[in-house]
Amino acid sequence: MSDPTERLGAYRAKRDPRATPEPGVSSGEDPVSAEEDLPRFVVQEHHARRLHWDLRLERDGVLVSWAVPKGIPPDPKRNHLAVHVEDHPLDYIDFAGEIP
Image: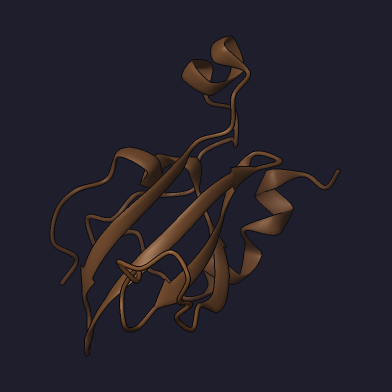
């Protein structure tokens, strides 16, 4: 498996930690996940240029992420487009707040 800090290169290149309160890039180690040894996921409502939802799955020390423009479909027999975006730090698993 690759090093989480290497996998977050695209994420880091797009952000200035001095200009935004969003989570930074940690070491990739997360004591809660390491203790439980269970991967986690999160769906976050994201008010960016357009409202969409972010689906993030914990894998190999990062959150592999997709933007879901139309949201999660209520009918399990239907699918909506999910666009793969750059991996995000594990700190996003609990993030709530505004990013200017």
